[in-house]
Length: 306
Image (cartoon, one colour):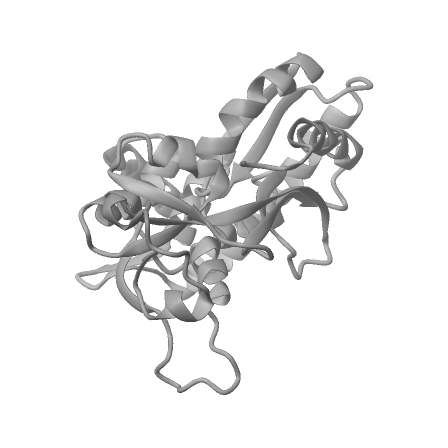
């Protein structure tokens, strides 16, 4: 076991979470054959199989599951040591900082913020990771991320949470429906609603707006006709006449510029979400991360869109 490297442990941990060589290789930014070779070398060092490979997929062996627990503890300690070193290097935030962002925020919010971050933290080497909420929270807990931008609130007492901004949801309809009245929640439940796939918090937020009143019939819920993996897909399907969708206000300019759709805004109180930044309370650079969040908060003024 003397030749095991931290890189191998990182590759193993990623594969143990994804249980899919292709997805894990993408996360690690290496080829699938290279990842497979690293895992085989690790198994040779351990003198026991870490994964069970079958036509049904990949799963950890009992030995592999225990190995994963111990490997993650090591990786957390290494990440904590890195945090400690960075906390001692100066008064400001500097060096490598890993930031996770949910997919319904990353492409619309980050490009607007990079200039402000570069000006406020010129020595910062920001590493970005786009993933769904459950993945970001897991990687925060494991020390693989320093902080994350996602929807609040969270039931996570071990994380510091700072609201950054609130934004409204807007309705996207085919261009031919521009003159039709804006539906209320009941009217929206009767439409063909296109949503992001399971796992996206924005899907849950959209469904919450359409929530059934207490006296509604059990089958009185939105007619979900498609689960998309990206807002771009949903908007293009609306343009094709498949139904309607909800998108966050910050996505309007990007997602509707080349689509034959119309945008309708809901009357107050409009459905909305709150986006914030979170980080581990125990992080040695927690104070610097709070400074980073404050810069983002000032840039948005607490509101996005319009």
